[in-house]
Image (cartoon, rainbow, N blue to C red):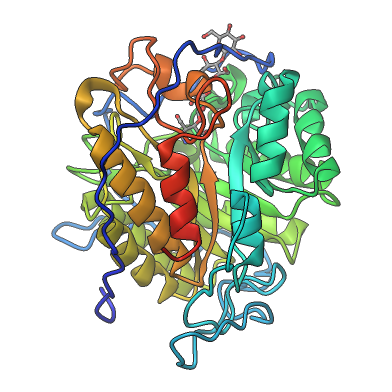
Length: 448
Ligand code: G3I
């Protein structure tokens, strides 16, 4: 399945200094999104009724091929090749690809991204690159209560993902009753600061309210999924046009993406079958013919069992004309997830962009808890992985999963080995000062 040989993208930078770490951590923001009832991404093995997408190796249990979602009209198959009007960077010559970007002016026709000559913020570096690159952050409602948080978030980023406020339990806590307030606050703040927003996430097993996760019957689950996608996309229609449509549909025995890759046995998979993914994308496309529709997953950053499985699943969708525009590589590096080098990431990006898709770094952080990732390794990873995206014109966004270390989800996440201590995983310390990780990211965005 692997296509043309990949190009190694590393320009290794030796690390001398450790990170200035976050420290006190005021963390703990909650915006009242309700208690999560779904599973977690940590914890490893979970039962499994494997089947679904075809793995590249060995036994395949079909199911996901065939595209018989029955969702009606296949509005567009917009993956790739929509317009490719943006971009136009030229270094390195070459005819460039077919262009997945289009409306954002990203992707399309470039064979390499040209960096800004200089920039004083990450946002500026992304905006001045050609083609431009969105620089994002996960934003929490609690964070927006802090003026320093807001200042740094808006100065350094032009792309927002709500950390929890647009998940199913937050938006539809009881069947058919929608609660928009916390999500609207984030979306409106982002727009006031000229930031784009990516909706996160329409269909996911985690942070799913109990009434939904316990639902039975194919028709019931299909109807609930259709209503949720329709209502949520409808509510935000004029304000955002990027969506994580399906999140984390694949699991392995280990959260590092190794061992027995298979479809995750969620209420959607168990009741609808593997076709629920195609169906979700088709419903989303019906709601917005121009929106960017993404599949998003973790531990597909390294070269491992999970990315092989996800590649085959996504390729099947593309072959069937399912309207998918790109794949988000979450890029949670270190415990509980995978470790990936810049070369790993570049190789994976190449395979997916060869399908005509965009790729995104959608949730990046690098956890130092437990000493699994050293300070020097963290700096090298930050530089090299960001560089891998920067050098790929069809890599259209890099989102960091938070602003400052003390608010990171990792600090209290079982399996992340932090036990309440700072994960030291992000670009800013708790005084909102720039860490060495920030400098390495900036270098990569400036082509250094
Ligand atoms: O809102 C409740 C609050 O009422 C309660 O008092 C408190 C007690 O623990 O929990 C609060 O909910 C927490 C919620 O974050 C909001 O803070 C949940 O317990 C907690 O599990 C939840 O964690 C979130 C996690 O997704 C859930 O899966 C993290 O903040 C969030 O960063 C994380 O983000 C995910 C992405 O969406 C998908 N990819 C993986 C990534 C990291 O796990």
